[in-house]
Length: 182
Image (tube, rainbow, N blue to C red; front, side, top):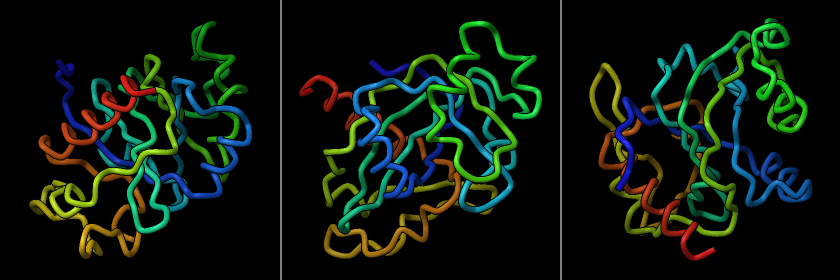
């Protein structure tokens, strides 16, 4: 059974980042930190409303499909410029290990317990794409640019967006079933 989390969010990882992680041997590793900043290329978790207890799903849009890569439950968010003094001894080496995730202007470090293993090879079935729903203060919206089970553009995934609970469950199950198959 899945742990109850306050909210779940997606964050889009670029294909360049995914290729770098694959080349660097990160496939199968469990993330313990993520990084955010003030720009669209590296969005702010705090500005998106992410907090302790929430879950982050990293996703990739590639070849007209959506690839859930991993999940991580948020334990704490720390300002990047204070991370050296605020991080506990076991968290500090992660700043160096997860260096590929730090590209761009970074202002925050999201710490969590080891997430699901990074997987780059299994897309979400196309019939599930049209049902993925995001929520905000303004209401709900479906994932845009989905046609015949294909993701035509990643534009509606750029940023950090809160998932409807049912959609978060679909992605979590997808990641868990992949772990069992790996």
